[in-house]
Length: 154
Image (tube, rainbow, N blue to C red; front, top):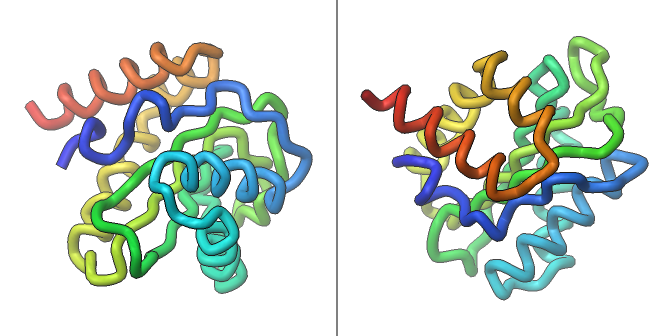
């Protein structure tokens, strides 16, 4: 599983403007609805419900919200680089400016966990994250992520 199977270049929001975690999730749900054809409200409620179980902020300004949807037929990723960091209730108390939303089919099981692991490994690289933070172009961010995944797979 590589980035190309998780995310499309059009699923990258390179300079998302939002003032809160809820607003970030709403904007990302809207983008996910556009890409998947599923109802925005259903996507939003799914990821918000997961977020209520515990913050998906993993530290160092990064969050990986995720959820499962019955009507989805494949794992879908949406990436956002926030214009201004937002509070995500992170354990390290750092505001979040990098968000990778993962949506999976209800029966995805192990594939969903593999995708989460892949994204977490990618965003653990301080070098890649710094380059993403310095970029405001979606295609550049996509290239950074796919090149980093290719290097890690080698």
